[in-house]
Image (cartoon, rainbow, N blue to C red; front, top):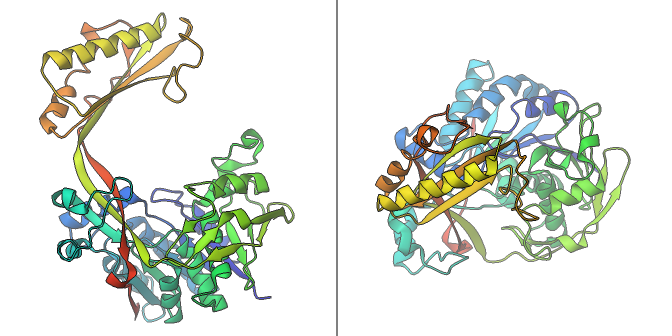
Length: 454
């Protein structure tokens, strides 16, 4: 059977810059996928575009393409990325510029998958009764409309496949599902029908397995983590996909990390709700039907996957401003480190009360004692060498948060002794960007796909 090799070189915006380069140069692949987006990333990009209409995309992607472009052309590797963020056309233009600068003008077709940004249409939707209710609270979006900073529909693999069908060699998308970056090439290569639910579910699960990059090849792995070889040169995942919906997850020979059934199971549980109903724009995948088997060293085979018809709704990711926050910290040393940190917490809270400041929340952690798991068995022993006192506040009142930031430094001289860790200075006031998940009928939006030569 025909086999297509799809590699993923980015699990988020900020992942290894070297991983995609190594994937392209260390062995044969047909597709390189790059996943840059998370919910909060969209609001960051929206702010960037507001300051400069030429921004709003993952700029790391452009410099990466400039570096590997000769390899892509020589080896006929196609790239699929959601690097477009909230400004995919600007990302395309930046790629065209570097392609021409490297002497590849007229030798490359770049496709854009857009139409997901519905920020400018929100008022129209609300006026027509498309409420975009919060999936968790049921509140209509109108209750926070004035604070909304970004709103993007999740498109699917079918739209990626259409861009490839039209001849795109580098596909730049805005907000698409993470799984679609791999599913799209499979639909394109294997000509899977829109109602081929089992195959679409298989491609969705394949995309889910590799979407976080090295998290499925040994990174962030609980099972025997200390025996995983050479994480300094960990190999990123490669799908060997076939038309019948079966596939193998592997990596390039000679790279570090480990691919086992146990490690793959950890990744499958990532961001998992009901395993029987993993809902995407293309289908509903049933994770309980997955059959896994070790298929040799660093090879895990998937088979038996079943799916069901897609819904008539798209998911919408909305971000909105929800106030302000600041977090400060100090380190207290032995002796009595924990008691000193507790005293510092009481002092700060009493001083905030005396100032009459009101906060939506005040949260304290004693890192080294209870930050991850809480105090499991009574009071920690007094011989703890050091404890980091970490306190954060949240409020709609920016002034209150700013005033809080001035109450940490004084503890160095007017609080408990043996304190350190204030070299970073006064805590920074940050805007809180909250997430609003919603649904919208598919009839209300449509992907916009364009292809041009570089």
